[in-house]
Structure formats: structure tokens, C-alpha cells
Length: 273
Image 1 (cartoon, rainbow, N blue to C red):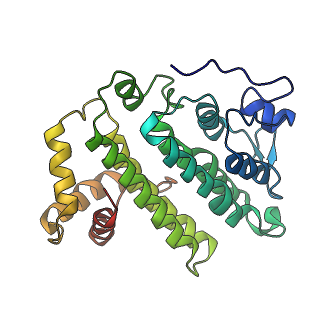
Image 2 (image 1 turned 45 degrees about the vertical axis):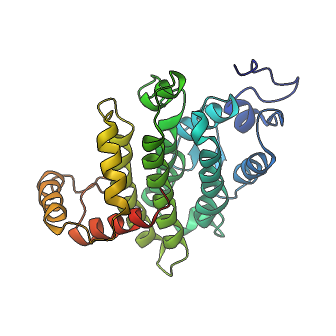
Image 3 (image 1 turned 120 degrees about the horizontal axis):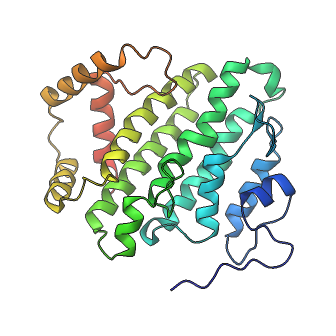
């Protein structure tokens, strides 16, 4: 059983203490790399943090903040602790600075674009990682994965599917960051990736996903050298397109072309499950 969470005097008890009151995280409960990354994130020129106000330029860290609390309090399912921290470091050191470190950030982008960037960094990306934590920041209930781990029912096959899917998403994000695309095109590509991988993660971490046989079949399929089944891919494209064509202004694109689905399926197969 983990020891009780008791930060030293003068240390932050949660993300609000760190971002809004300026108190440091206790090194007994958070690694040095993550503490350093959070200090850098808090100091980004294009960001302002306020617990009371929330405009396009003043950030309330609801989702990212509560994810950080789960990490700080030791409430991440044990098989995912290292990967959650690794992906958080990517978010804080690579993804966020690619937008907020630009000179004159507020003058560089209109309000609508700044809002989308803020949602990407502080809401959508952390929401995926929160699926393996003690408290789901959206539903306010303990996620299925954490409950199964606590009960000793979390299988290695389910861990492999979740780990591999998140890693493949982050790899795609890295590829976009290394490209020569303009900011708006990058945001569009990030939205497409988030929609695809969020759907997969919602399935793999859902209450109804509890078949070991299905997990083994999926891992076998992802390890197969044969090309993806285009009939299935085209069926997914047709079914999703008719539903999402009415959501013209959604900020995460959950509709995907057959070529996108094929490329991401191949990327999942290249991931080390």
C-alpha cells in the first residue's frame, strides 16, 4: 500500500498551489524532469494562469491540472506510470512550446486559433492520458482501467493495446511537429490524429471492453504483416462520414478518410506491442 500523501510544509498540495500560488511541487512525490518541465510550462510567454478568470488567453488548467494531481498523488495505474510521465514531458517540453514560445504569441494568432491551441494542450491531449488514472476528469468516477488494476484484473494484453495506441499517437504528433507545415495545418492534423486515437482509447478503456480473446485477436492483427483489410477501412469511412458531415465546426475531427485510417493502422502495427 502506498504511503499517505503528505507534502512538506511550503510545498504544493495540488496543481492549484503550483500554478496559481507559485508553490513548488514536493520532490518526494514528483520526479525532477517533470518538475522542471512544469516550471518551464508555467513560464511560457504566451500563457497566463488564473483560477478566477478564464478568457482565450487566461488558462484554467482543469483537465491538465487534474491529470497532474493524479500523477502527483500517485494515482496512476502502476503499469502506465512511466509512460504517462513520458508523454506528459512531450506535451510540456515539445508540443506546448511549439505554439506558446513563438514571439508575440497573442499578436500572431486570432482569438479562435488561440482557443483551439489552449484546448489541445490543456484539455484534449491530457484527457487521453487521464484514462488510466484514479479519477476520470470528465466523468468524475474512477476509470475502468484503474479499477481493474486495483482489483488485480488488468491484463497485460489490455495494457499493451493502450500503451501502443498512445505511443503511436505521440509518434504521429512528433512527426507533425518536425514537418514544415504552417500552424493552422498542424492544428488540423493534430485534430485528425486526436479524433482517431481518442476513439481507439475510449474503446480499449471502456467498461464493455473485457474480452481477453478480443485483446489477443487485436494484438495478433496488429502484429500481422498482411496489409489492412480495405473493405473494413472503407466501411469505417462510409459510416463515420455520414454521421460527422453535419458537425462542420467541431474542433476534433472524428471522421477519417480511408487513406488516413490505413496509414494509422499501419502505424499501430509498427508500434512495439
